[in-house]
Amino acid sequence: MTLSTMKRYEKFADEIAESIRNGVLAPGERVPSVRHASRTYGVSPSTVFQAYYLLEDRGLIQARARSGYFVREHAKHPLHEPESPVERGPRQAQTTEVDVSELVFSVLGSLKNPATVPFGSAFPSPYLFPLARLARSMAQSVRDMPPQAVIADMTAGNPDLRRQIALRYMVAGVRLPMDELVITNGAMEALNLCLQSVTRPGDLVAIEAPAFYATLQVLERLKLKAVEIPVHPREGIDLESLADSLQRLPIKACWFMSSLQNPLGASMSEDKKRALYELLHGHQVPLIEDDVYAELYYGTQPPKPVKSFDRDGLVMHCGSFSKSLAPGYRVGWVAGGRYAEQISRLKLMTTISPSVPAQAAIADYLQHGGYDRHLRKLRHALEMQQGAMLASAARHFPASTRVTRPTGGYFLWFEFPERVDSLQLFQLALAQGISLAPGPIFSATRRFGNCARLNHGHPWDAGSERAMETLGLILATF
Image 1 (tube, rainbow, N blue to C red):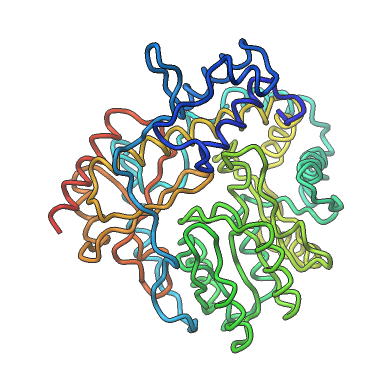
Image 2 (image 1 turned 30 degrees about the horizontal axis):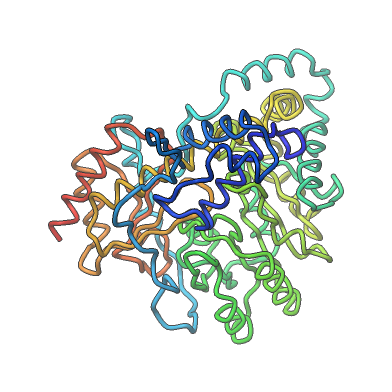
């Protein structure tokens, strides 16, 4: 559902939600009465009621008997955000050999038991995805697929899917030819191929600190060296530190998440994204833009990627349906810019093609399945679950704990008191059936030892609340 096809009450609800997120309407504050809102915004009382019911369902407001509607107070004493910047080490970045895989595999192994509370997971709950509707799209698309398409679509990718992806870029204000799109086995293959297209073993790659642990694993596998650039918990990459590193070091590529960064959830402003592009353009250093959470924003407007400022093909923009629609289908893509042909050739030398039926199924769903309607429901669920985890953390975690407040996605980054060892916390929590992602797995230099990433992408229930209480009791032992 696009803004033009949204119902009036949904548009009005999103306007109020934006005011709550921006702090214009504070926790505990009364929202405009139905009569006042109807008169001020020029909508009917019925529209206002429907909007307020929707905001109640999203956990943003609550009704009080004979008093009206109020912004929900998730906690009496909310936890503060992490200090700026998150990394308090020296500004001057150093080169680092990467060796984190064993640590990462131990965390991933903790998720194999379905009874474990999956706060350490990298995915939201599968119950948030329209799997039955996707199955119908799979059956329909395979039935209608011409025999020659099974072979013809393997190299370039399903043309209907590429067309649908190109249309979504166009709606977001990014115009690119379909020839620039390469369909891949999820975003991880896209990111690997991009990196291999512009680096050789031993090269330096600028990454975020903290960074998604898979970034570190890819660098380790390709024998590349990391240059860690600190990330502000809300504003993203420290451009001053990046500029210094580009000046001093022979960096061959940058791998950044400009929106809803994993693990912090930080999003750069449009001005900062433009400045990032200009900085890299000046040094002619390519950017691999990992944008897998692009569809999971909470506001009314999608964040623009750095790709939208690219005027000479320097940005390789990677996306995926794994986080927003179909995790197991493993369908991603890259808009490869000037490197598209090289990326395509590398793909043919390795995996050749993602599943042709999976591509056709997603193409059919994008055309007929109501993808935007699904995304709105998914965003609302994730935002409500974020509020539940923040409120629970304020109840159970030490008062000096700090936590990020992303405007999308399904991760929260917790900075605990210095005395907390998050690797030890991970082991103690796992013994109680709770998984989490400890800070050191997000750094090539094993920093962030008192930090952890928690996933709120699963429906909040009594078990989630008990797990947070248990974590609070464990934290109190340090």
